[in-house]
Length: 254
Length: 253
Image 1 (cartoon, each protein chain N blue to C red):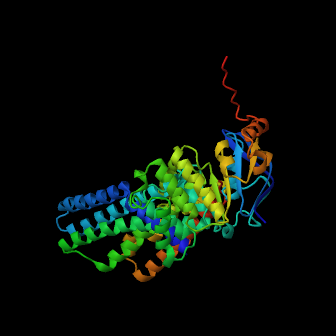
Image 2 (image 1 turned 90 degrees about the vertical axis):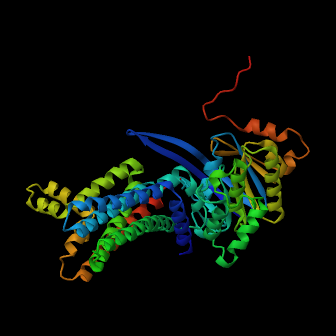
Image 3 (image 1 turned 30 degrees about the horizontal axis):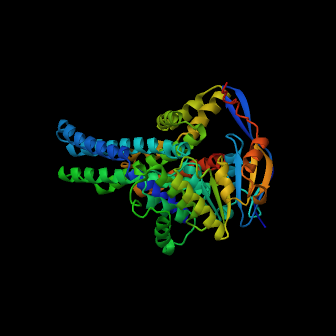
């Protein structure tokens, strides 16, 4: 059974400046499906459309054309959002609140009953290793601590589908290892995970399937069997599938 | 209601912890003290002068704080992208907007209540504490602050610029004190389009003559005046919030 599906999705950003209209194509006919219980990795260069696809799934953007469905319902759907946990690429959290207050806020927004809320908040803060710093304001947190609060808010309501936008970007090797373990733990609990990344080595360690995005389209989908036991297979497939669309040329070494 | 309350709680907490809010409340207290000192000039009317200067200070600080906070209320969360995480939870956008607005109104009202308490103690010290008219003045001041807050929120979402929203809020604040005059000018105007334009501005701007507590002191039935004033604030405020919600619903982040 599919937990999410994007069919023929096109997203065009229109901006007007001093009467001049410019159009940028974010997605150009994207077709993507993720099955229940699988870990799906979205690989792509900067500007390939990974974050746009995720924002469409979360209802932050509306498609220019095509359909976006989560749990069989068209997006945006409030009831579906209650079953999704989302952690963006950076921790976009309220810095005036403490770690505990932030998670308490998201627990309330995720409809966790008031009588269970405090226990769940404490358990989640313990799970992400923040029990000592939980009463400090986020303005005093390090980047790694903020990332953990971001993960905690995504998991506090025990979602069926977890969407992580570049979860390992900018993290130290130890934190990357912990995020990898978390994704595998979620898979072990039967959750579906969709995550985007630039990092091929990370993707191949945890994913059941990967989709390579290029120019707003899904250039290739690969299953674990295609790269497992074949060192460099995923990297080669990636290099063969993508083309730069951001106008940046190669670094010349001559 | 749970989501509105959750957003309300964090907004209130955020404002109460903000230094700008604390500075505004302290500045208001300084203004009240200055009013008490300046009242020496009015030898026989000292109590009345403390009353009028104090209420004017509370209104000015309340309005400046409310407009300043509401024009940044949603735009700043969009800029910092904190709104992403809120709206990717099962939260209706208008619930978020109401929670943010009423959390801000509550924070400003708490500051104004603190100033009001000090003001009341000053009036007691001068032996001039007219309870009935003081309550009417409070209905009027809180109403004006709520109206301007709702309008500033609408303008910030329509113009998507803090500076422009602030400038237009001041424009409508001034215009709102001349709505009867604007209607009079419109009636006398020979040009149809000009009459339409003046009437449109007169209708869009809040009508502060309905919230004039100085006039209400001389009104026959203050309770009826207060009821109409509250009704007007509710109607105008609801219209602004409904339009804000509609604009916010269309936004992509």
